[in-house]
Image 1 (cartoon, rainbow, N blue to C red):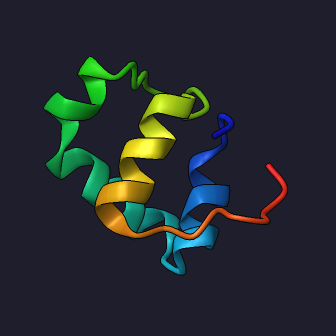
Image 2 (image 1 turned 45 degrees about the horizontal axis):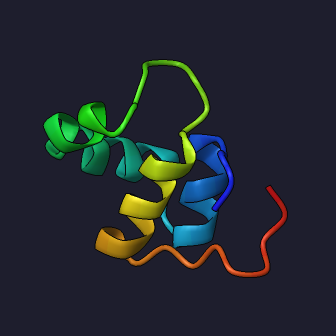
Length: 63
């Protein structure tokens, strides 16, 4: 898994960036522990967690 922007991950998940940000806010404790930082690209660990728990499809996507 590679780091990616919130916009790209939202696109892969088929939702708006606003919707993805609400999901992130709802799980802020877990994601902060994985290395989530405000206004940065999402770390590979954070991307992997969101893919597993939210169902985003990043296979074959350019990051």
